[in-house]
Each structure stands twice: as C-alpha cells, then as structure tokens.
Image 1 (cartoon, rainbow, N blue to C red):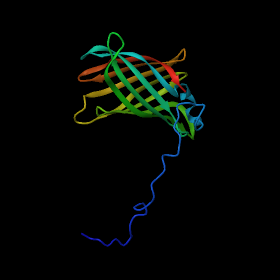
Image 2: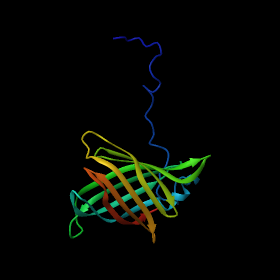
Image 3: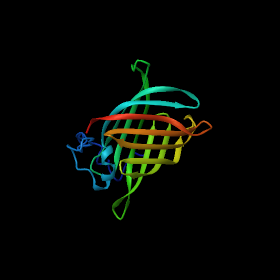
Image 4: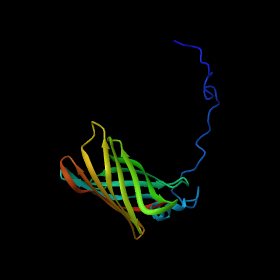
Length: 197
C-alpha cells in the first residue's frame, strides 16, 4: 500500500461541517425565488395538490386511491415533481401506501426561449424510469414516453401516456400504460384540488 500522496490530502478531508442547503425550493409562488420565465406555460401546475382517483389495468382489479402531488421550483428552468398515493377502502379509509414517483419537468428551449414542448423524467421505487416528451397547450399538458428503462426485477412496462389539465382550478389527469403484454390501456385517473401554493 502506498502511503505517500504527492498531492497531499484532499482539501475537503478536514474541512468544517457544511451548513444546511442554502437555497429554497418552493411550491408557493408568493415565497421563495422568482419563477424562471421559461416556466410560465407550466405556472398553473406549481403547487401542492391532494385528491382522489380510480385505478385499474387488465391484469388487476380496479381500486380507489388518494394522492398528493407537489410541483415546485428553485428559480431555475425546471420543475420538481413528487407524488405519493395510498389505497382507500370502500369507506375512504387508508388501507396501505401505493405508488410513489419523483421527477423533473423541463420546457424545451430554443435560443433561450421556451417552446410549447416539454421533457419529463419520472422514476419510481419499483425500478421503472420513464422519459416523456410532450406539449403544453393552454392549461393542458400531454406527454408520451420516448423511452422506458427498468431494472431486471421491475414489472415489464413498455410505454406510457399522460394527460394533465387544470379544470376549474383542479388538477385532473389520466394515465395510460402498456405493460406485461398489454398495449396502452387506462391505468390511473384523478382529480386533485390545490391545498398549497
């Protein structure tokens, strides 16, 4: 084992502790950094949302769920997306945790200006990572997968399609999925109301 390092120890080796992350990430446009101008078309989605939905697929029974979605920014030209859901019983009582996913939405820029095109990276703890390409049209965002990557132990998901819209102040969405030998089929739909931002 060589013990002599001609460069000396790295400068961070004995440095003092670091303070907490100094930059704010916010879902509330009244606080924190200004929204990047490239995100103006996505501005209606920034916030914290909570509501109910219905799920299903040809290989599973239909189910009811509740969900929270938080869409935030830190002043740069992308949005952070985080969602978590839980299964509900017939009396709307929580049964168990369900899907979680995180990701990023970015407007496509041309000469520094946002177009109506959007790129999104969404990943979940079941080993699936999706790259979506789509467009914003008013208060509607429609995206389809360009690529789906999965770990060797993940369910076979091959494609997805998502349609989001702001309707009478609520966030509505429908999600289709192609998986386990079935083509694109309805999978999730929900209506969420703004609870923050």
